[in-house]
Image 1 (tube, one colour):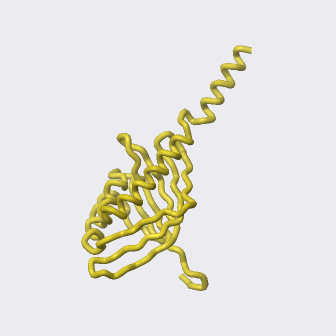
Image 2 (cartoon, helix red, strand yellow):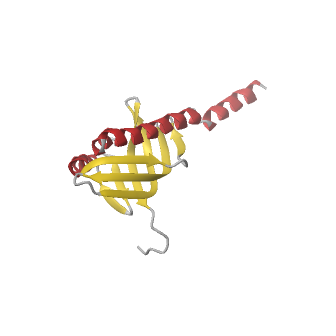
Image 3 (cartoon, helix red, strand yellow):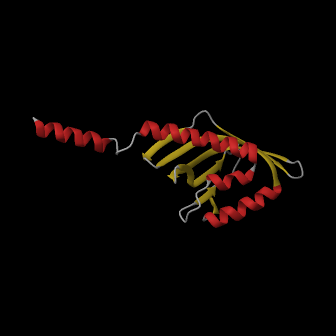
Length: 157
């Protein structure tokens, strides 16, 4: 009887992966909210603190590699900060978080973004975002990201 209790306890521990998925999901949801807030309040420069500064970072959009690494992201964000005056980023109400480990989770959601250029030109974008959030040094960052803009019905790519 004692042996079965030990086996069941070990199986229960292995089944949860040694972390609490609900806590990870809650923490990553809060991170996603912070990202949208910071981008809206601080503009494009705020992305730098939310993208991992590591060799594993990359970002793609609409099937194209935009930033192959963290250094490219830093340079791109600096350029964007000169040309974009304001960004309003809103995640959809369908935000999904899939915890993979205590320090890793998939994030997926619709988004709507309004960018205003330095010249005052307004550009709106709606689509879907996916990314891997990784916790390092006590905070979450995107290890990678992919944005896909929605294609209007009847439009060809």
